[in-house]
Image (cartoon, rainbow, N blue to C red):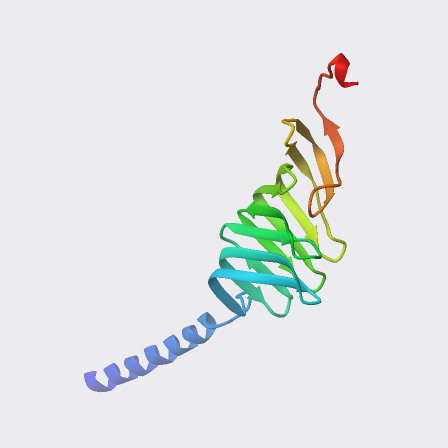
Length: 177
């Protein structure tokens, strides 16, 4: 009798664990692809526009969405493949369908022209070739100026930029007017 009860109990437990395994194997919400220490080269008609590096990547095919969630480091290039800027952030999201990249967390953009931008979130629209944010910004120039404000727009080389709502105090000497 004990042997029959033990076999029945073993059979019952094995059925239950199979059902639990099926529930645990659900892919809902999980990435379709995952990679570590990645380098992505983004091109436009064969011309390199950006090289993006990250410690970890998750790709979601259905959403056409990529999450880079470990120390993003991106170099940007002009139409002749000349380096223009470097962006560093904690993480970034890439929307593949509309060619947007959203960098988040301690975003620092350093241009080859000597301008440095600090913000929490920054969007790169590769089709329009602009970067922008609605967040607080600090901008430093090669001349030693430090500017503050809310909102920012620029070309990717940061040669033509503007702070949407500047703030702060400056002093201009008589000989600079």
